[in-house]
Length: 233
Image 1 (cartoon, rainbow, N blue to C red):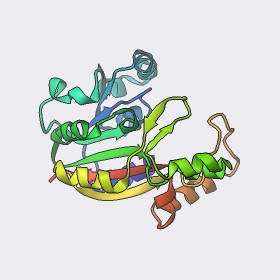
Image 2 (cartoon, rainbow, N blue to C red):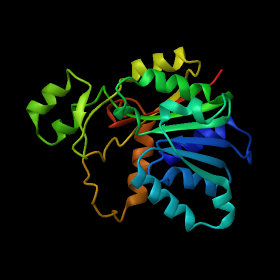
Image 3 (cartoon, rainbow, N blue to C red):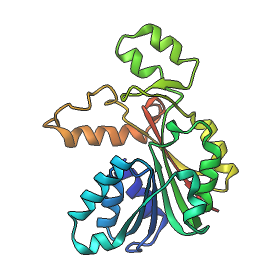
Image 4 (cartoon, rainbow, N blue to C red):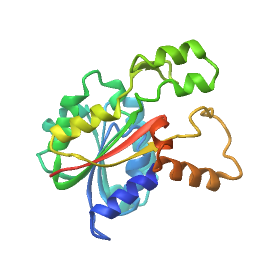
């Protein structure tokens, strides 16, 4: 999905432009650090103390120039208006957050207000149109049948969370002034791989297949995750 994001950034902004990026729910800061290394000014917003500590530790090991380009703020993505002025960012990332938010529309509206005109809103959400895929591939037929009728599921951490349907997210993006520009599927073929699985020898071929499937119908429609990119009007 990093390649997908890079593609959208390259397509929206002049080559070499140093972007102002807000990473909401940055976790351990993997994506934020990657963008800071690429020369962008990145703000990471996170409320989990353990994640913040891990991100600070990772940042402390970076060269001074990268440390200067990244700041970490403790906070909730629903309170962006408390921390930032409208239009403060060229790119806003909200990856792996929506599934934990019962009512995502106010959160997304607040994130859209943070975007400058022409800014990019990047969302990564569980695909509510394909929840039956994982239990079905595991042979859990009862679980698969149940998944057709709901957007609720239990994630790998054992938490009861919520998926989002692409049509609903598309309508939300249009309603908040950041209509959908393009979308991808993420983890088309690899959703059942264990988290602790070793990196395969043919990982480059695997990534190439996932990237191709993630932008190709009908494969992207059954991916575990949806990556949607909206653009602020």
